[in-house]
Image (cartoon, rainbow, N blue to C red; front, side):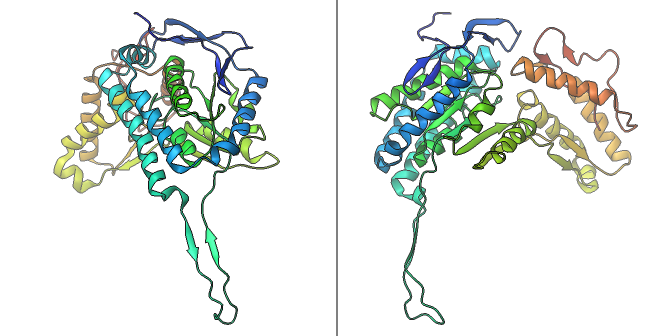
Length: 385
């Protein structure tokens, strides 16, 4: 594939590219687990600290930039994202196995988020201004003049999601919100789509230079287990996270154990239980089965909003629903998963389920091809509860 982009795999720190760690992080194709040919440098603890300090140094100047200038910065980021060409999508498809139509739509959503926050800045909504005039004659005590508005909190550490490589990632909603509020960002790139993260970060940096925004307003680091160093750094004043319950809870606990605890704004996974009522089953049981299968196989079941637990009253109608679910799931087309880690978690979950001594589990038949060996693809399991 011709490459019109430069991919160095180095950290983005204070407007510069740095790499003191080894290029040990390998970008992998999602469809077969093979290397894409690009390596990324593991951030060191010193580089994580440098990124946080660069954000802190940029904070005062950036937080005092006028709303119109910040709005123009967000618009410029959106324009740069929209200008990313076919090679960008080719890399993103390699790393995530997501189809072009999905990635194109997600890119539009990502740039749209930036423009939405720009609109809020221009309207003044971001300030949340409130004025309660003095009531000197109020009894039993007079009320003073009270004025309230929102101010930037400081540098924000942002962790992107694996299943939305654009809209909940490098230039996603958390980054857009922080930049709109006047808070510099240190973004921890997700290991499942590091090329996509790098090219998106380059787009943000081009917009920053174009609008003469202070260096250090956006920073990005790569690496495993470096997020803990970032959250515990005293310069970081808040955390934005999208991902698993285990990962989000670990970051929350670290943030709470700091000498100065900081807020963690986390969107974490859930099992999303769904209750099917008997009257609904009687009226449209087959359609419910179709809609459920379409929902939890959408995107290979990697949407956080999918139903994860189906509850209903025992009986012939519910047994028929289970039969319909099994039939349709086994007929579903196998799909590639986002990355090797996601596939590993899926396989571990299946193994744990199979080892659970629960009589209500309907196991798949021995001939059922649940997972395609040696590929990050699954055929949705016929196991239902």
